[in-house]
Amino acid sequence: MFILDDSPPYIDEANNDTLTTRDTISGQKEKEKQKENKKQQQKETVSEIIEFWDQNGFGYSNVNGKEQLLSWLDDTKFLNPKDVIMKALQIACTNNKRKLNYVVGILKNWENESLLTVEEIDLSNNKKESGDEQYQSIKGRDVPTEFELKLTAGEDW
Image (cartoon, rainbow, N blue to C red; front, side, top):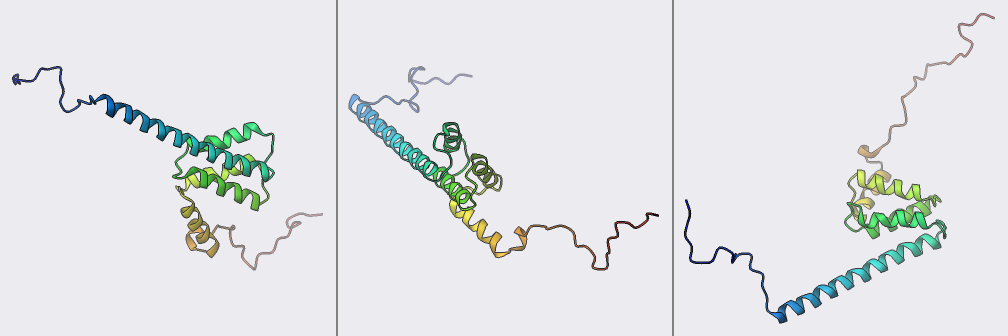
């Protein structure tokens, strides 16, 4: 069953996005400005991470390592990847583990634990340090105090 309409079938009023020339040009200029601002922010972010990498002994000439680290800016779940990457680099420096694998391991752990912001990471670290029962690590089984190890037991010499 067809419903007859007075408007031509090729015009869709809901999706009619035709604009005047002035609106289109100013809209394009605004979009270009947004793109330029975003590129500038990305450049600043990249330069800050690279500068920290170089100044803290991660390997000045390790271009491949820098590229792998910078890939975390785009391919990640973190809400503010720059701050999270900088936090991981700082932790690696504090622990004197200036290696890419160590930093990537930290980032993967945070991602697996769904710690997506620096605030969540700090809160989690504070809970671990305060001895919260949920975060206490298991250090092995308790050995009974009456247990005595005799290495030669059962051997007849």
